[in-house]
Image (cartoon, helix red, strand yellow):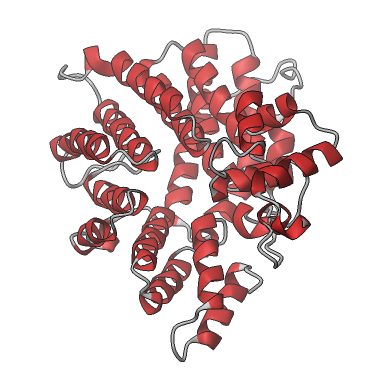
Length: 405
């Protein structure tokens, strides 16, 4: 009977065995205790894969089959991504609350240059997490210490620290400790507000919107997009306003499109995409926002994701065919785009195309596909139904990515 139990009842049983109350579980997965109750009692539909992963992680389960009852083991690591070896050092730096060293002065201009170079490394490196893991711990500590030190340079130091947290967000994403995503997004917003910098508030809002969207907190995500856009609105038509202020405005509208697509609202999704696209065209074909990669090429990639999330594979593939992938300057973002195109082909059961695209994504940026839950889910599916004559190719790619097929 245990194998026949519905998902909601399984969640309840494992929650009670772990001695965790509904409010505590809800807090760990960013849901209300009433939502947990309705899931457990079958009032709501079973959670999607991303939420099942969060629940399994919160309950300390290593096997998703404990919740799904599908009869075979599926490691939580399959979807959560392995813990990068540098994550501990980054965590330690984030929780280093030592007071500024007496007499030690940080050169904020030099810190800003270190941050700029780190962003370049992030976008140019196939192994971007490994490369960031080498520079982030010291950059975090130095920026935090500079922002805590009293003096006339403190506001500028807060600006740099907000940018550092925005960069850290890319490192901690899709790793096992999801609380870090919320921590760094919240800290980035706090530092941006403390610096009284409208641009940084909007840019930090973009990071928080992604966390909200991935947790299904859609209304909160849309409200934050609206407030982030509004704070920049008075500056956007001024001649002295930097292009990045318009770029982050477009990036926020692109996020609104992705939020609407995730909740299945086709018209709203494409309306928001159109608003973002107008900004991309206004900024020109050579423009790319350093934090979000927003620009004309990434707008084409976003169109693919909209089609996939809306379950309209034809729309997704038309958008993919209209985009030259090499136009996406950021190497990790290009790899992620290839994974999204693979998702579209998967919706059409074209497994050979899925395998070819995942192989290309791996060649482009191995550390992107190795931490991407969608890619791992696709590989698990391919391992069960490999394209004709390609079972060995599937097994080899699974091994490289870290999927136990």
